[in-house]
Every structure is written in C-alpha cells, then in structure tokens.
Image 1: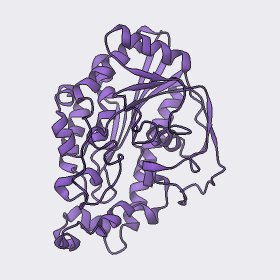
Image 2: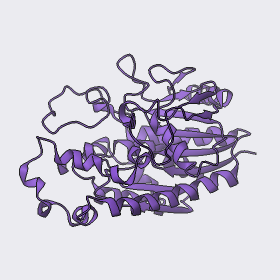
Image 3: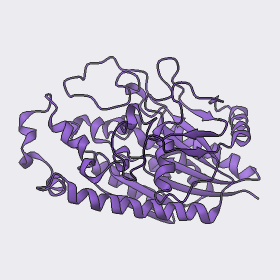
Length: 353
C-alpha cells in the first residue's frame, strides 16, 4: 500500500561555507556601485538587519542561523529515515546549471542512471562554492554516490502525460556533470552529520527563475545592470500546485513509499528590487508561512506570479507542488520551523507532513 511523507527544506548555498562567509551576499551588495549611497548607512536599514549585522558583520548571527537550520535538517532527516522511502521526489530549481540556452523546460523529470558526484569540484555557477572552503572541510576529491529511481520516474512521466500534464524528461545530464545544487544541497544538508543518504531520488526541476533564468543566469547582478531583455515567465503558482496534486495521486495509486521533498529558501534578497536587493521580503514570507501552518492551501494556490516576483519568492514555486500534494492528501504540517533573517539572503523554512 502506498504511503507518502512530505518534507520541506532549504538548499541555501552559503550554508555550505563557513560562518565567516555566510553574510557575503549582503557584504557584496554593500560594494555594489549601483546601491544608493544613503543605503550604506545602517540607520537606513531595518532594525532586524542592524541587529543581525551588529559590529562583527554577522558572525555571531551566522552561528545562530546555522544552528537553527541544522536542527531542522536533523529533524527532517530523522523523519525520512524512520519512514524509509522507496525513493524521494525532490522539487527544486535549475539556476542556469543543467538547462541553459539550448532548452528551458517548465518542468522536467530526471530519470538518470546512478552516478557519483563530486560536490565541491562541480560546485559551479549559481551554487557559488567553487574554490571556497566548506563547513565539512571536504576537498574537491570528496564524492558521494547518488541513486536514481529511474523506473518509477518513467512511470511518473507516463502518469502525468496521460492526464494532460505535459512534462519533459531526461535520461542524462545536458550541461551539468551532476545535479543542480537545489537537489545536491538538499541531500548534503539533510545528511549534515554525514551518516549517508541511501535513498534513490527523482529530481523534478522547475523553471522558477523564469524571466531571469537566462538573462540574469539565475544569479546575483548589480543594481546598475537592470536593463537586460527578460525571458518568458515561470509556470504559474497554480500550475506548480496542480503538478503536486497529480504527483500525490500517482504516489497514492502506486505500491511505493515516497518522500516528497520541496527544496528552497523563500524570498531572496538578491532578487528583491523593492529593497534594493539588500534583504528579503520577510513580511510576505510570514504570511505564507502562517497559511502553510494552518493548511490554508487555497492561499498558496491563489498566489499570483506577480506576487511571487514582487516578493522575490521565485524559488517558492518549488514549495507549490508540496502544498498541492498535501492539499490533495488533506494534511497539515506536523512540524514546521521558520528561521527568519534579514541578513543571510533568505529566510529558511523546514516542514514535516
């Protein structure tokens, strides 16, 4: 009989690094020549940002931020190990990593063969960890074996296509030697204590970055560089939500035990134009977090793409399928955690359903 576990985590790249470097996204923004000079004065910052940055440029806050995140990862990993899934379906974004100018699918199912990945040797592009020290002191030769649930992935694609949900699929990588950091980091962080992540996966990339996936390469840019020709948009929140509904139906009708995992932080400072890309839209995140806790999934499905973009929540589209799946199953979260920050680029949410 099918059984389903729901999990939500972050894949925040600076979490891979050291505490001393965790505030680099903000520090680099302060060096942005396009930042209005008055924004260099801490008196112009939100009080929460001043408190986190303090007089040590966020070092003490980074330790607290990491400890809070680690607690969430350990809780989620314990739930996955107790559940012992046949495989995990992971929703994440591809930030100009595997999908580039040649093709940008709205949704894709990666039905890869098993592979060995070198996280730090392959940490290019938006993962932004190439050549940087990582928290675990692992070298470029460090590798992990990743299993893929290839046959169930093909079954999932068939199920979706037969129900008029057009989805792409791939049997091998295109431009990335491994998997995009939304998927790899989810595994690395869930296995924070390096006890092993042995569960096969089905990565499902979503084109969260839409208008900025090629034009901005899904990454940080200067405030002086805002006139690029944008790309077509992301799929809508409702479409991502409905994908989750169908995936939950597939899992429910299958013989499998499946963990459904959403991988992303929420509002991203470097995308938030209304804050001069200095800090995220925390108030919007709080509203969505409250709706998640209460199981108000209509609020989630009815969120517009304009709201997503205005609040710099492009990666929240990775959580939309999880919300759709849990709505279909009639579940509210059993446990949630909101690690709020104005300094470390994005607030982090963890959840267990």
